[in-house]
Length: 336
Image 1 (cartoon, one colour):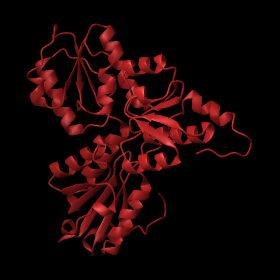
Image 2 (tube, rainbow, N blue to C red):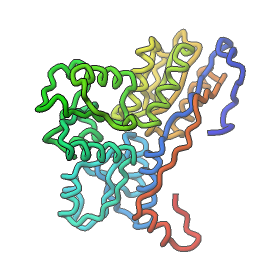
Image 3 (cartoon, one colour):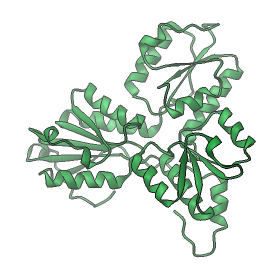
């Protein structure tokens, strides 16, 4: 977002009146943009209904907007009529889901984030090489469920350093770890340290699995936490990366709350607060941030300072089915 709000360049203005620190980067990551575009383009190119397995991204506003356009969200591919189109969410699916789709002759469009696909590929590789796999993450998260499905017999999920203590594997010298892409950097570091202590020969991915956007948003929160009396994170409560932003701030001693929209802001949160930092999880649209800025402005937080911690220019390509749909669109037609 550029030139939408008046930006104060003098950092000393934090202490003058009520200030809103608007963190950047925030909001949509490349994987989320790609996933939403896939659904929108599929609806325009093929027409509704378009079925989507699970929430395309973990944000209520986005899901409801796509439902209004004709997307039908289902929990299982078994709910999709045989032969229809189905889109896999950005969180990925297990081989079992892919096989079920083939069995029902579904026309699949895969919106799995490429960074999640990377973790799936690593899981298959380590399993084929005879490793026991330790997947760091939250057991009930869609992404972890999908990754676990790549090698369920040899994979164990851990969510804390304490859980590492009870792990047992056939060969302590043939162990590898992978991580969910949307975890807290600090928490993951502690779990990896516990794993290295228990299994000194443990292997890991060549590059960390936590995605660039998750890391960047956490780094931004850390940079401004000491300047803010309150941090607000726009995001839905089932969004892992959004919840981690709240945790990062609280671990640094800054009061923080997760909000779906400005309507969730409680008056008591603003009492005796002079500086608010505002960010958004990687699946939260900018329009919701703008509404929060407007609401806080009406409460006196009209000294807005956009704080850019680092640039973010990542883009992911679209799957071939969508590229072909765009190419075959009539001349003059526009697709998002």
